[in-house]
Image 1 (cartoon, rainbow, N blue to C red):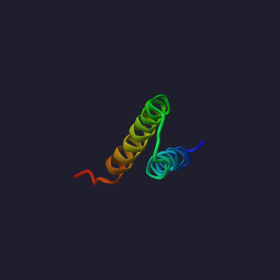
Image 2 (spheres, one colour):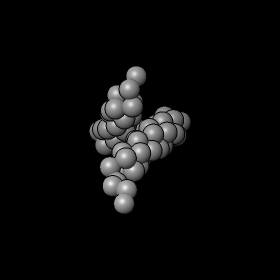
Image 3 (tube, rainbow, N blue to C red):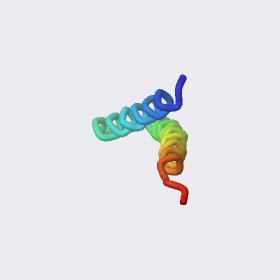
Image 4 (cartoon, helix red, strand yellow):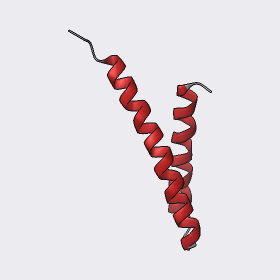
Length: 61
């Protein structure tokens, strides 16, 4: 899996979790904890990829 695929996979996971949380009125606390943990991992992976791309795009003097 390429890093772009990894980013997209994690972005889609974040979107899916946000959609579920937005649509469901009664979330089970255990389910919520699991979703928050998964979202945290996915977010950190997306953020790391964004930072890597930003670093690669900076022009060195």
